[in-house]
Image (cartoon, rainbow, N blue to C red):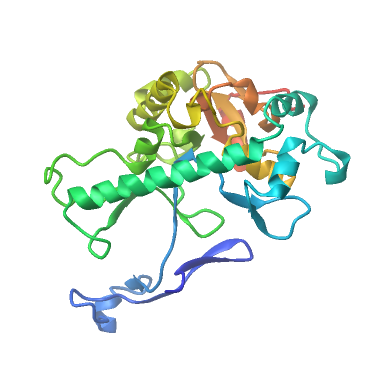
Length: 319
């Protein structure tokens, strides 16, 4: 089945058909079109869901000097992550503090380490979904996902952006529905948090401008937002337990977004606020590592930084 959602020129697009009735048959146009600016549609194809709030290690990604994606445990990635600052890879204008931070992670085995944790994350998610299928007494044909969207519905690759769980029409049968897969992946240490404003709470109905954090309230908001508070607590517990990416014998060396910007030879572009503090500082994108724990980083896409600056946030070191 073809993908229903895709991109053209980097913009999400979709192909749909006339909405179906309960028997799976196309509705009449009178039934499918309720008024002059609305039409009921049926998604005739497949799509993908990118989990909000988490990031798992890449299994394959583009690497400089190679055509197309390569497995992270390939010879190309092994060579690159051993030292991505070699002259043979060209110039890369990383500031010295960030480059020094990354140098603590490069070296032999960095690429295979990333692929190992990527494989582990994939198997962890498969196990969670299979467990839900079994718990509900369903199969691959009858099982369904429930998606909860936040501010953005699609990303630049035509994927849904959502908090995702098993679909369970009866919330108490066969028992209370578990937390979302996003949260469960954090809970078992298979993923790291990647909290990007404004997609921080699927249950918030606040207008965008009203959702801009006031200076001096970041930690307060993080503690008062249930989904965000749980996610941060899960990461702390996974770290304390040495689970998954925090395995003390072989911890994840590069965060997934670091592999992506290194692979593209592009600078990080999201500003960041420290959720562990109630200050008024927005750090520049290349300073994200100054907040050591990933659960304490709230990333702000560049288009939204002016909203925070207008609210009174201080852009530290931007000028």
